[in-house]
Length: 238
Image (cartoon, rainbow, N blue to C red):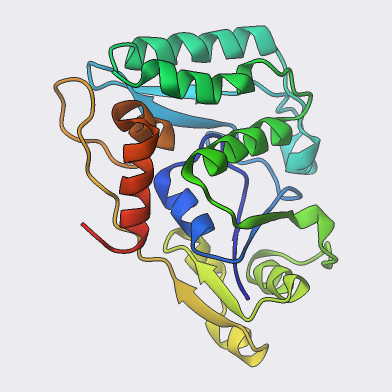
């Protein structure tokens, strides 16, 4: 069984979803620390002028080094949800697909989740439904893993707890947390993701900007075309 491991992200980018779609089980790390200024509570879109705009979920961040991600509570729901709706509308209101995508994602603004983790997982599930990703999700907190494990030991522990024989790793910061030889000794083969970001037409007169929330692909292309672009990118097709 192939697994991938990642922190929950808010309306994640295409590479995140591609990793999820490529494995049998995707482990969401909900007992780690919240990383400030990370996609664990926000993500990026782009407006018509080519300016990056952040969709932020407000949460209580005090003593964040002493708390697990799953324990962070949201705050000021009406403020942050209203701000996000305004940013999204201004950025994509001229899209031919605005109503279609807005109707698909707006339920996240109808529920006042108490916990940040609930918000991010809700956003992930919205995108999973849209892109038809049937990979099962499992929370780190639901696996029996030694809570003292850190970094590469934690990755290995999670793989073993999930019964994995293949770990699908990203090529980002997580590479420094991997001991490939130790994984092999434990019967777990490591495969690295090689994701090529698709290029598509974005609203506005600006150069293409990759790495945004998958919302950008959706608002620019609609659901059916976006699914085609997404799955072609996973299959290595241009």
